[in-house]
Image (cartoon, rainbow, N blue to C red; front, side):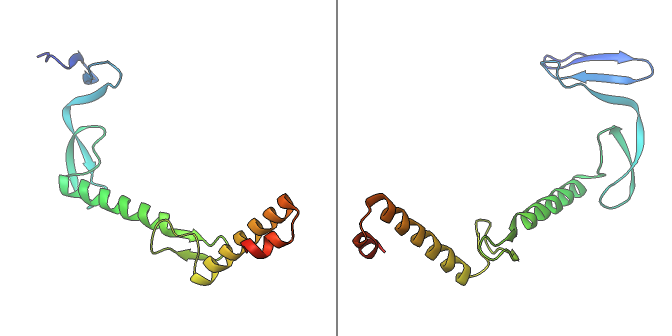
Amino acid sequence: MVTDYRIQHTEENRGVFIYDKDHSRPYTVFKGDIPRICMVCGDEFLARTMRAEYCSGRCSNDAYLARRRLYKQQMRDKVCLVCGDQFTAKRSDNRFCSAKCKQLDYRRRVTANCLDTLTLTGNSNAVTDTC
């Protein structure tokens, strides 16, 4: 049976090839079920495609949550920009391990800006006015 959005071709030993509308992504549906082992719970199940990795929707969801949790943890493991220590950030946009390092970075940036204005203006009073 050919539907309006998929074209199906059959070969005797390979199974049924189903293509998307634009014929860009074929995937194989085999005639028989394939015995597989679930990657989450370890149970055996019969898969209908070669891409099946999980025995149920619950196992698929559990694997997704584990991948998401691992990604978030990796995003929070950072290195402080000032002292170089590794730390676990409470927020994903933290750049410093402590308030002390944050203040030290701020002081370095302000001092650098003051020295830039001193060299640009050539006036020593500019440092006391802006800093």
